[in-house]
Structure formats: C-alpha cells, structure tokens
Image 1 (cartoon, rainbow, N blue to C red):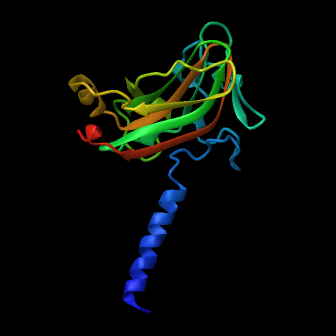
Image 2 (spheres, rainbow, N blue to C red):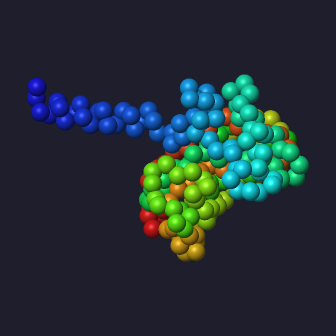
Image 3 (tube, one colour):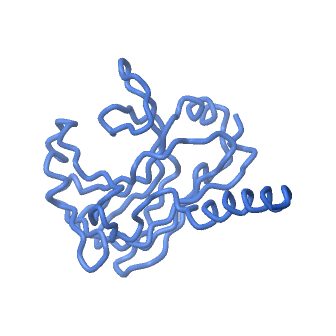
Length: 196
C-alpha cells in the first residue's frame, strides 16, 4: 500500500476520535452504562463538613436528569470529574439547569494537597481548591441553557498567578432548594490569554 495512504489513514484515525469525543466529561446526560452518576462527585463525607456529609443522598437521577434536593440552608452540590487544566486553552461548559431557589455554577481549580504524590486519577479529597471562575447564578425555575467559561473574564495578573498552580478543574454546581441539571458538555479551545 502507498505510504501516503498509511499517513492519511493514521491522521484520520487521530482526528475522528478527537471530534467525536470532545466532551471532556464522560457522562453529561446521566445515562452511562457504569452508573447514572458515573463521572460525577456527590460524596463529600470525607470533608467532615456537617452541611455536606449527607450530600450524596440528596443527588439522584430522575428521568435522565441529575436532581439535587437541599436539606436546610447549606444547599446541595455536584461536581464533574477532575479534568487536567491544559495551559493555553479556555474551557467552556454548556448545560441545561433549573433551580427553585439560588444556584451557583462555576469552574473550580485545584492543586495537589501537601504530601499527595501526583497521579492521573485524583479524588477530590487529595486536592485543595485554590481558584473559582466567575460564577453564573442565573438558573431559572424552568429548565434553561447556561454557558460558562474559564477564564470567562479578562485575567488579571493575580488571577494568572493563581491559575499557574491549578492542576485540575471541575464544573461545580450548587443549589439551595431543589434543582436539576442535564446535557452537560465541557469543551476546550485554544486561547492565548490562558498561555501563562
């Protein structure tokens, strides 16, 4: 076979998966074969924070949507899996969301906790949150689209300094009362502002 054909086939095989799999989370529709909440963090018992010890019991998948029901004034939260932050790229999250009370959606930035040896699949308990992107608090009482970005704003020198230490990001969703999310998509695109 012609060597140029081999090269073209190799390039095609590299490009096709990148286009098909550009959602950085594996389960944005809460229908994964490994479990409805596969790829999402809901268990915060490890924090010892009394407001969130029972958080995982307040997040269920109903009708293909993640439904969050807060208990008391602390609210309820869910986070995507950790995604390695790649310098030189901005991150965009698009999702459907509703909340009958306040909500807050943002990208959370993490670094390793002291004493943890870096590896490829960190759990939240091994990380320390050191950065929050601009939050969107615009969820309505009916399901609607939301889009947020990291950075989402013109980065100050201080923000760039903080982002230099971020190793992983998550999409962080919090609501007070009851809410739901679905059709979550996180993508990345080149952005020179993030090349620090």
